[in-house]
Amino acid sequence: MNAQAFLQQVRDTEAPYGTAVLWWMGQMGLWVKLGDTVLSIDYFANPREDRLTPAWVPAEEVTGIDVFLGTHDHEDHIDHPSWQIWARTCPEARFVFPKLHAAGILADGISEDRQLGLTDGASVQYKDITIHAIASAHEFLDQDPETGYYPALQYIIEGNGVRLYHAGDTLRYEGMLGKLQSFGTFDAMLVPINGRDAERYLRNCIGNMTFQESVDLAGELIPRLVIPGHWDMFPGNTADPTDFSTYLEAKYGDKVPCLIPKHLEPIVIQQ
Image 1 (tube, rainbow, N blue to C red):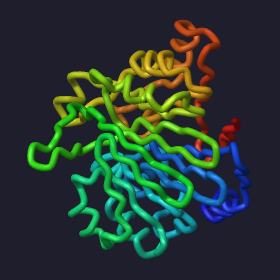
Image 2: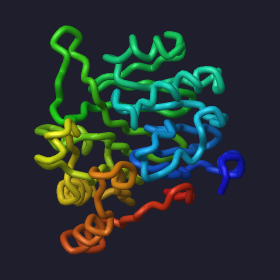
Image 3: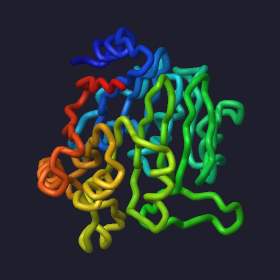
Image 4: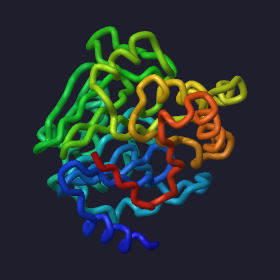
């Protein structure tokens, strides 16, 4: 499917109350439609030669997005060259990101009135959608001692009668499960599964939850659907999503439905 056909599909897709439609864009990239509102989370559009998954919609062709969300200031999550483009091509859009990075977002040409900076425990509303943030440990929490802000976040998105959880890049840390459980049941959650090891540390590639750790998080939260992410983008930092799904089934049976996503294929979440 070419970019324009996909964008038309997003525009034409209906998401009535009690419904969310998701499109996995690779890595932790996710587009979400809630009612008439379209959100783009961690979409990585830079056409780097070393990427295994293409940028399905080139940055300059992206239109119709109401809210761009970035979980942390790594290129495959907050893609600054693309955010600079989207500041122009989506002139009414708002940008959600860890508040600690506000100066960098301002340098991208995104004015303060379009910035929705967050930190752990904070929330922001856009129309009838509420976005909550909790801290991520990527690989450590790294709370800024001066501001108290965190450099990496996870997002809980509530709107249109649906509750979604996007884990960003994180390890589990003490208190994280309780924060998530306080929101109630998630209709869908996207979690990283690429893990971490010494070889990646030595080339400055910091880690995420392993597929086993992400399975256990899903098994404790019991969402209506869990989706594994962060396994398809860069050589030397991939994973096999069937390891995730097999371990989930072996350990938790049919308690947690799992879907291994396919790029650009709509995932319909209904209450």
